[in-house]
Amino acid sequence: MAENKTQEIPINNNQRITWEGCSVLLDINDGERMVFERLTPAASLKIGNKKCSLQPLIGSPFGSLFELENGENGPFLSRVSTVSEGNNNDSTKEEEESPTVQESKDNRELIDNNTSQSLTGEDIEEMRRKGAKGAEIIEALISNSATFDKKTAFSQEKYRLKKQKKYSPRVLLRRPVTRSICEAYFKKRPEQIGFLRMDTLALLLSLANVTSHSDVLVVDMVGGLVTGAIAERLGGKGYVCNAYHGSTPYSVDIVRMFNFGKEICERIVSCSLKELCSTSNVPSASIDQLEDACNSASQSNDENTTSFTEAGMVSFEGGNSRTNPETVDSQIPKLNKCTKAGQKAPPEAVNSWKENGFSSLIVAAPLIDAWSTVKEVLPLLAFSAPFAVYHQYQQPLAQCMHNLQVEKMAIGLQVSELWLREYQVLPSRTHPQMQMSTAGGYVLSGTRIHSDKQDVMKQDVMAG
Image (cartoon, rainbow, N blue to C red; front, side, top):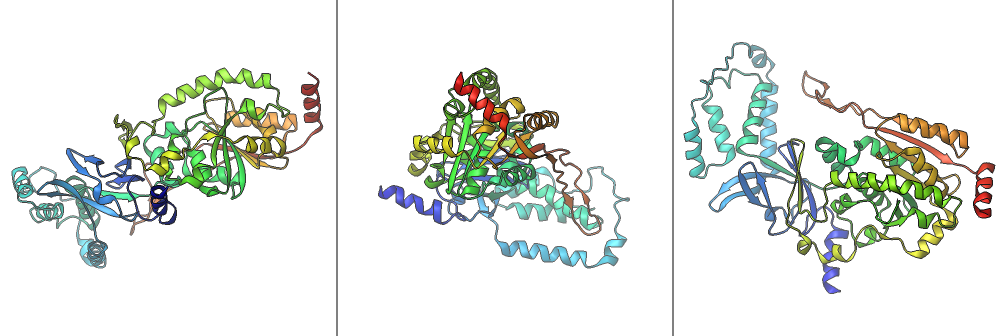
């Protein structure tokens, strides 16, 4: 018991500092590659053809920046000081504050014939053998370039970044929260989260009124991203219940990346729809008809979702995912082992939900029919409770919205779509990013109401 208490201190009280066994998101070269990793003394990271230990990252604040350097014992990650970054920014500002010099520079006279660089590959390898740092190699390349001084400030900065990514890669230590996890998946593997963008996920939580002390019913078939986002917002106050068809809960492996403590993990539970609807006004026969379709959809979704249970690391690079076959169960702290998110809901909580209903509902199941799912789970909500349904396409939600209006099951129905547009803001060149997502999905929202038609349905079920 004493060991568990000592490990509970950094997880619950100091979330700004990494600790041994925690999950982190490593952003390599400003989004060029993203890696989810557990920090252990034996953990390592491969950048290019070099492999380095992640030991220096343990105990560092989230947001720290590291550079790959060569040492006597091989490559290692060295933390970049803020002082050096400030000096670089000052020098850049001095260059930008001389408009007369910049106006005289033009790239039209530059010829790309591979003769402007006098430093050869053998010279660079010789510098590496002598222990030269990446910054020293970059400065040597700049000083031996015959065309660097003739380039504009924008071209010079672009040249520096290109060489820095090659000779001195940088690793940004990011904290895995809802936004960073969603951004990483949407950028490299969007199909694993149902093409759910971060702004759409925020709208989903807002329209469902997910707040502290709420009991949220969720149908999560996007790997557990929505479940983790709800649990993060609840903060251990309230329940998030994953409803599923059949006998096997849907995969929520992404929840393991959030570094939740015992208090929050205990509030992430699962329960089958058949058990939740055993005494409600939902016919069990209609639930059985959906089980085969949902189970087949869940199996296909599991094949496309990377499992964090058996994988120690997931790497996003060029749209491909890579998993480490070695299990890391022995490296996970005992605190995380004893409390696993997604356990079966306690009977007293299930009885309370059957009697009082859930306070809100979120459905994120793009692989199954939206109307069939909403028709089964909506009666589990309390009256006047909000709900939100996500889908990649608009047509399934439009059909679901029409059926809800005909059945008089909800009011305030609307289908929302957000358009997140990212801008590049630089001196004299502010414009939208050249590569951005065109759509982030659609959200159907509304409020459950009581109708006479539902009373007739309930009486027919009880009579049958």
